[in-house]
Length: 136
Image 1 (cartoon, rainbow, N blue to C red):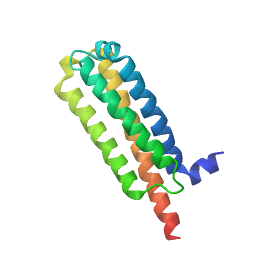
Image 2: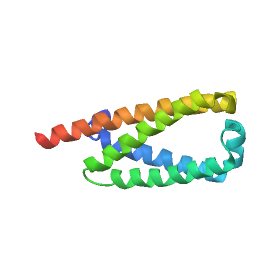
Image 3: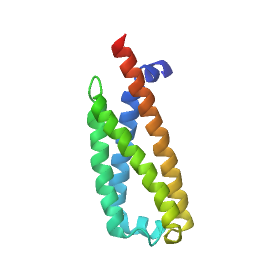
Image 4: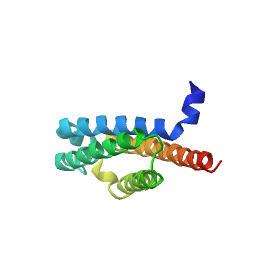
């Protein structure tokens, strides 16, 4: 099983990111008021809904790429750049708007930033592997 994942690291990373992002988007859209309340006054219900809509589309983008036999290098580069922006934005929110977050909100944003950074690194490794296999 691990050998299959290792051979298809990029494909599985895109699939998992697509599923998680789509589900998170639906959850943010459906529970925007509750999420905004838990995160803190820095995030209104409208902001959470906007994030939910973005995550839903982001997830569909990843699912589409994971369904291809070979993921588009350009598409994966966009995904990696998007992940980098998410992590940078999360750090900026934690620094700039610390007082606008609840303790739960700060932990939530920090944990998500770490998770997205990990996924980004897996995409980078998977893309590198894909390029190496194509050159061989």
